[in-house]
Amino acid sequence: MNYNFNWMVLWDYRELLIQGLIITLKLSITSIILSTVIGIILGILRLAKNLAVRLVASAYVEFFLNTPLIIQLFFWYFALPMIFPEPVQMWLWEHNYEFISAVIGLTIYTSTFIAEAVRAGIQSIDKGQQEAALASGLSDFQTMWYVILPQAIRVVIPPICNQFLNLTKNSSLAMTIAVPELTHQAQAIEALTFRGFEAFTAATLIYIALTITISLLMSRIERWSAKGQQIVTA
Amino acid sequence: MKKKQRVVVFTLTLALILGLGAVTLAQSTLDKVKSKGVLVAGVKYDAPPFGFVDETGAVVGFDIDVAKYIADKLGVKLSLVQVTSKSRIPMLQDGTVDMLVATMTHSKARDETIDFSITYFFTGQKLLVKENSGIQSVADLAGKTVATIQGSTSEINIRRAQPAAKILVFQEYPQAFLALQQGRAQAMTTDASILAGFAGLYPGYAIVGPNIAPEPYGIGIRENDSAWRDAINLAIMDMWESGQYHKAYEKWFGVNSKYPLPLAGEIEVWP
Image (tube, rainbow over the protein chains, first blue to last red):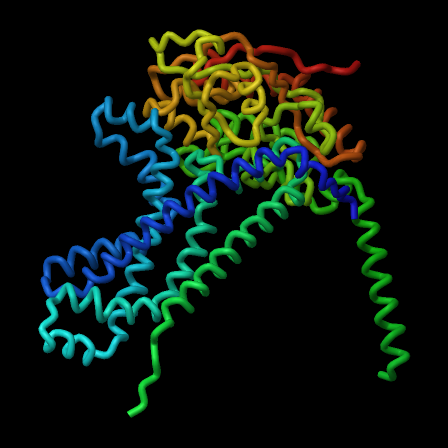
């Protein structure tokens, strides 16, 4: 083998890796929180009684579900500012619009997958639950909030956890709109030192550490949500 | 087959494969190219007028003309592969391409990992700004935003030349130019020759400033392949002496072309 490994470059350039990791964390955590909130709302709207609401929510979900994330990122970063007047554009660019548009792109993209998971989760709850709740005098909102959702959450956590992992990995695409996150910095190290193998091994290990952390957190949450559930035998 | 016979056959086959492998690895790229009859050149597809896709969908440009001349001189066919500033050196090192004719500056840092031919193009790093922007040089960039490309010498140089500027690093030239067009960045920096490509296509932009750094382009080849390097150097010198270089230069950078850029140097020709 002709390749001379030089792992010291990772120590020399640790600043770049750390800065990249911080941005990836900021990007992922912000987008995870936002996309979960939006995803749950969308999932419920997809099952609304009102036809208009249902159609709009469905159209939104289908559109963003079926477009590649990188195209969506380019759209938010390059195309969207053009509709705004100059002063608004200037303001956006003063305020780190690269990061903002990456968050928008990741959030909207992932929220559609979460919406689908939530919808499937809600539909998996026995209709009897909803009928009993309504018959007991609870309103639609109360039924959803106190009866259906708590049960649906348990079903929905594994697919949502998957989406969080996808989001964390997809955050690497933000480098195409000049966000200096982890992958971008790994490439920078490669460009400066030509040690591509070492740089990308470091990035891989860091991403794996992130995704394992998320998975562990989600399984904790899953166990917590199962508390108080009892198997009732007749 | 009995077990012992199988072991012997297996070992012999392995030795044969490794032996052949060793032979091919030790072979110079020159021999490999001549025996295959194809020269695989890595070129840019997004850097007019060096390498770009024209209206008919063909890949054309000054770099392509140089690569074609070298292939013709060696008597082989030319095959083009797209590279970017980021991917070019890895693609050369792993053997995907035999040579890189991709607006690559010959730098000391790069020379530690790959080898270069003699300089075949002379330019320098400058700034591209909107006309009437008031920016004349790097000094005017303090507090402003500059767009550049990841993996290029320009990124390192501009950080050093103007630490007070905000640097936006994109993956490809068209995106960096789009940022400049939209006002996201007040300047774009890379080699003047590549900037000329954008200034030529879009009116309203000017290339300003003295050279932030010289950018002598060399053809990239793998380390320790003297026979191959000699062949390429001789072909380049031949292109200059025969007048073909000037013809190609006139075609892409002449006064009547879309991207006028005066010839900024001469190819070293050995007697």
